[in-house]
Length: 160
Image (cartoon, rainbow, N blue to C red; front, side, top):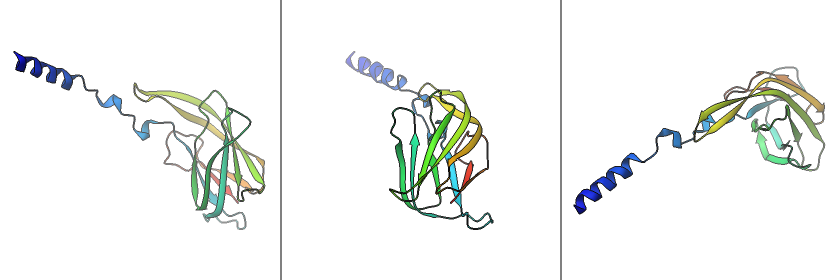
């Protein structure tokens, strides 16, 4: 009898384990904006590396911006966008810690997509439109893709 109870207990334990929905894979999450850099000194489409880059993002919670990266010798970055009801995200770029900063506003429409019980919803961004509101050190913005559904495509090229 004791063995029978242990067997049924073990069987119950095996059948109560969750399925694949308990794991939220990174591909099922809200994508980040991908940016690459070009030189403003020439008119070619040659990609460049930035010797030092500081990127801040205003997520709308306070007057402070969140520093998302401070890197040396960088050729591209991924920027997490806002996931609230705001129709834009402000991104700030500096090449020196105390230097001037450029302000880039990314306007978009959002579309929530249900992924799974474990992951919940992810946000896709459509009709991306960039406005360079302050242009030092970033001189120009070139659009590459106007939708953000995954992180495989470059959305914008920034000219420094």
